[in-house]
Image (cartoon, rainbow, N blue to C red; front, top):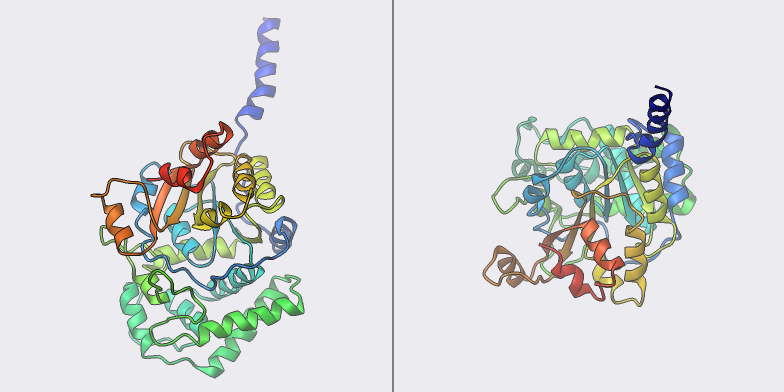
Length: 368
């Protein structure tokens, strides 16, 4: 009997170390949010594309991404608004957005303020683009009809001034984020770019290579089966993202994929809270890492520190893929647009650690 008691006692001590409970927060305080952002951030760098995505097929992978997906976990991503669509689809408990540009972190703070102040999609677009809400919109209005209606509502300078002041007041006085004067100047520059968007919602400064898209194009795009999945496709998607913002659970970080601080700091945070990565949207950043010496090795070493399971997926964008030439994949590539690819993160890190990854082609060949 005594031996049994000792064994049970040992199991009580050992099991938690192997099966740590998921302790991700249900909500993060303003102070803790800012600490996460600043503690994990690195020095900002430069990347030539900004403001918004140009990957019109970014929704194509969502049906396959959802096949073996379980809600919860932590979403990781790079860049601006396309992350919100993946977050709406995957419904993680928490999200971290990395980008080498400090400007991207500030853009996400603008989004955060606009989401929080906007109960509906129509109010969100009104604040983001400084246009008055058209009449006749309801919670059932499609994203296409939503943007068509806003095309008739011109940018309003007074509304722009009011919105910009409200955004700064929310970030500085309500959340008490310690933004510098340079940060505030960058917020001015970013927000005026949205104000200056033309009536097709094309944003100046967006990368136009490989078939540039307007904001409306991206938000009204569909998956390959014709289903609209953007974060503005319906009120349910919008609310899913908004609620995470309201709880301070979408955390933007200034970070280099090949850096020594940002990715590793977030990896430790996820491990310490007994959770796993659900997906990591990398866009086509890896392509550039493989062009810059050992940066790709540093990146994959960083990724190897994340807690993963069989469902943890890389979401990649590429201009090419090594698939059947008769497949849907080849059709997308021939159209000179980005193709979205999925790749199990654990398989990639295993291959890397075994010395089987030596170039960009290798990771693309592991993607479907």
